[in-house]
Image 1 (spheres, rainbow, N blue to C red):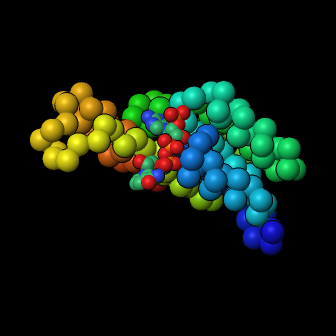
Image 2 (image 1 turned 180 degrees about the vertical axis):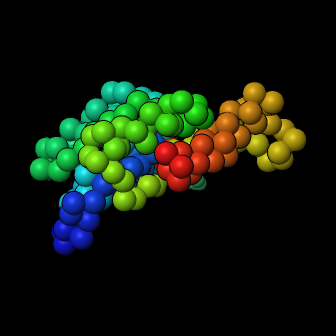
Image 3 (image 1 turned 45 degrees about the vertical axis):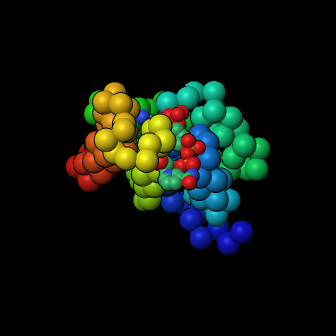
Length: 131
Ligand SMILES: NC(=O)c1ccc[n+]([C@@H]2O[C@H](COP(=O)([O-])OP(=O)(O)OC[C@H]3O[C@@H](n4cnc5c(N)ncnc54)[C@H](OP(=O)(O)O)[C@@H]3O)[C@@H](O)[C@H]2O)c1
């Protein structure tokens, strides 16, 4: 641990499991204050506890990145909780169901993947840049 992110604030969407959780733990290990945003509250709180147990600082904001109002609230929470934001990892996403051809997707699966993976990424970047 080098403390290279000491005094920095890092937001990780989808930080309550998988790759995003590993990124959140890695930022915290390097001294960053970490904001975790995702839908599942218990997994979010568990990840905060994992960070705090190791002496780090973290805050969970329940967020669905496909909802504009929730994304705005997520960015606002970074400022309220830690006074700003230095890094954002827009990791939240879903795989949808496996299909060999795009044409084989059910329409509702296609819409959900586009809402979260594409629109969600855009909403996050839009709010991060414009507040
Ligand atoms: N693992 C791979 O091989 C692979 C390959 C290509 C791309 N990816 C992408 O890499 C990212 C991480 O993958 P992973 O393997 O770590 O998957 P994962 O364990 O399923 O994690 C996905 C994360 O995204 C969050 N998430 C999903 N929908 C969300 C929404 N609408 N709003 C907010 N958060 C949402 C999930 O939390 P909640 O469900 O609690 O919201 C979860 O924390 C994803 O974007 C995934 O699509 C992964």
